[in-house]
Image 1 (spheres, one colour):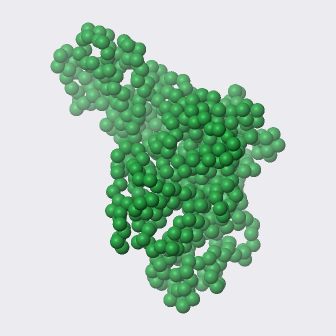
Image 2 (cartoon, rainbow, N blue to C red):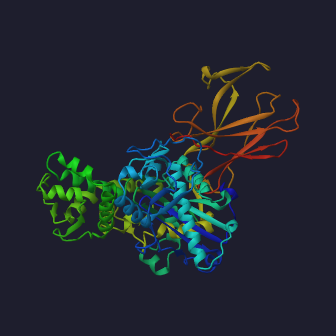
Image 3 (cartoon, rainbow, N blue to C red):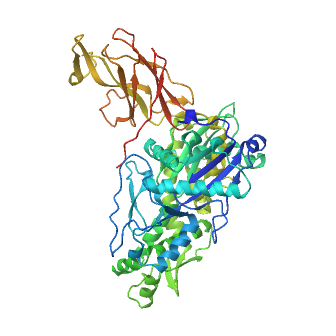
Length: 610
């Protein structure tokens, strides 16, 4: 797909869908050619929303007509496991971000939960489901209603895209969709299945497949580092100079996503080791904070008390904590307190003392609020999460390929926290004295900003490290010295013995691959002369660089090309040349029928979903 995207788009729109926050940015081609730093961001997200370049990653889906009558029970909504296509045919309304939070909060206050079933669905944090290796197609909303994950993501992308197009139209711009490229950001550590899921969701959201490009989030941040103003470049260890190696750590709400590169003489960058990451970020702090709340009560009655709080009250408290945690400085006085409004049911139970707080010194209840000592947040919550983040960074810095790397760049929303920066700096300085940790002036904007530039110039990333081994399943003549006897089969016409399930390698795991350059061509010949087609099953192995058979270890079929031999006879020469090409963030498999010259490109279907 990436090999066929439109070239030289008149307009690039980047959609950054984060675990916690999402937003969009845009730039016209003329602006890119004259001043590539002139990227535009939206900061208007509806009445009452903060004027920031991102909004909350959440969506309210309202069915104009109830899907089922709610009679004090949840509707039995069946979740399809068909291929990735939008299954909703009814007319629905959607709201996203802080506007969705505000509207849903009002609906929840005016209606009982059983009155909302089948008509209102509210989702937060749904992107996190795609981080799981075997992700599930079904998720539940705030009141436990099941829904297709694919539909939620597609509707969110559509709402974000439509919000952007409406914004441009109100500014008097005419958008030619055929000449517009949409860049959708994804974590580098995601599986190919998850990336394909996002491609399909974007297409279902109304983006043409020739107008769609994925950008790996830490790679976009690396591009940001190559285009810094001269003054900021000097402050950041002369970042982006030719020959320099540096590591980008994109610290978001759900992941720490790392990308190590070297700047080449041409100004492009090459990946120097496979991406690493972990499911750790700002959300870990939030979960630990809620656990501290639970652990601060005496006895077991707190569980019943918290169970009475509405979902809206709980996520409001978490959202308030989300805002305040980032502002806590690393050197705040121990006595500083953080105040959060308590849900009504918990507040009432504390007033009548049906539940009591332990005397920990970290948390107190005054009037309507919990008061937290900031020392709890700095030492108990942040420190453990920072240790996990640093452990992932250290794995990269310890690699032989990272020799000579002298700069670690922290970007992403989690890097806005002074506590995070201070902790990571201390840990790196302790083990790697020669490495400097730097933070750009706007770490929260880095990915979104340069995803736009990536859309204008996708080949700025010159080479990548293959995450997996890819090849074709084939048959070869049986050799008793090297082949498994159980895989031997006899070709009855010629009487020759063959070995089945051979993994014929095209690209190896950890191999450096230059983008848009075809790997060596390999020829495949039908076993039978009378064959009028040749199936070429495409396989991958995540762990092995040298798999022998396609049914060993973690080898998995990811696609298939079926070459049809046209206008040939039994005596005709039949052969197929196969090459694999990295076109950006995905792999294309091209098969050419040597007799007709016709080319086939694989439509890889990933099946590792439930």
